[in-house]
Image (cartoon, rainbow, N blue to C red; front, side, top):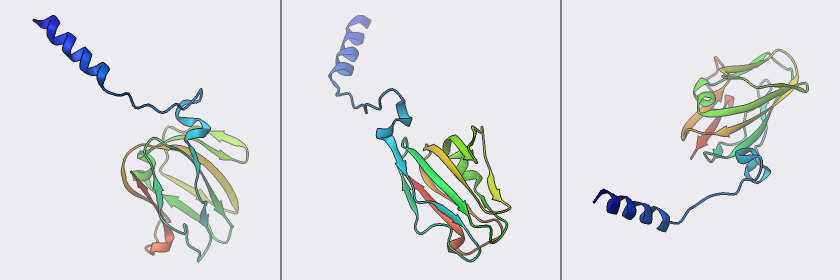
Length: 143
């Protein structure tokens, strides 16, 4: 009896179509699964992002954060950083592979590039600490 049940379950499992994406050798980080996002801007009096970012869970993203040095500014967003898996953060050709991030601060002009995989669905923000305006944050919607 148990063998018959196992045979039926196995047959049903094989009958269901398999949906798989062929990512290639690099897996999730392959170029066929990679998307470049519009950069985030840290500049006094300018919006951080032009529009909300619409992300897909399981997709590999690359984003630049650019500061013009007009003010000492940071981006904070622990909830966003916990909703993604960070591959690396590159600062002046130095690659950092962090276990966790809460905020990124620029004391002067500079640029970082961050690569990550969106993981947890939801709406998350990166915002300039102490600011309350809608233009002083970037919204990431992960589906």
